Image (cartoon, rainbow, N blue to C red; front, side, top):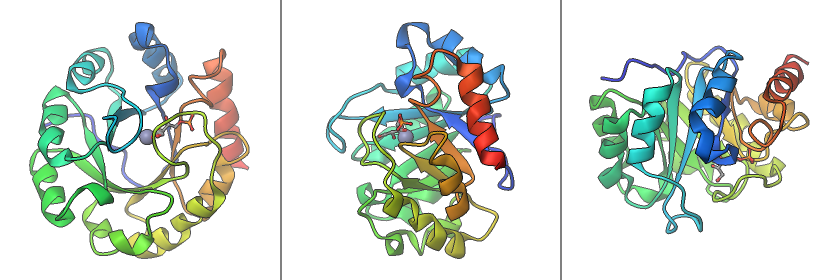
Length: 225
Ligand code: DX5
Ligand code: ZN
């Protein structure tokens, strides 16, 4: 059972994505943002198959786990997450998010994940309709609304995709987190919040900046407005 738990819904959380961090200095990159009060670190796992890019697997998560007490929010952009999720959980992932498009029986998979002690998120790609998650969203702790086409950091926020948060919020109520991922910056973060998101992945807008303290505080200020 993992001891680092996703904060209960009701707070706004920034989840810096290490995709834009310096992989040769990950421990200090992560320490920089957790020292600023960040509680969730977003790990983008890509397999070169579900998305046209490759990142890292369970061995990297194992080492990341050793260097932080932050919640490891693991975003599986992979085909066959049922096969690989247990490896990520063993390595120290606290939260697993999978893409609805990749699993035949999502309700069963959610139960399998929960039984392994993690919280669970289900993801919608920009072109995937909200109806596809309607029956399973309430079984999850989080719905992740992709606000770019998954695969790369540094892309532009797709407003129409973010608007799906409005419908997702109607479906899930207040107790389940809605995370947005892609193109979140000082301009777009409040828009996403207004649509109903409460968890904000930011790669380029945090690890892409020299001054992480300024980057985090600018995003937090934008959220307060
Ligand atoms: C995109 C990833 C994102 C990405 C976000 O496929 O899922 O988490 O790192 O990066 P930014 O914030 O740079 O758009
Ligand atoms: Zn992501």
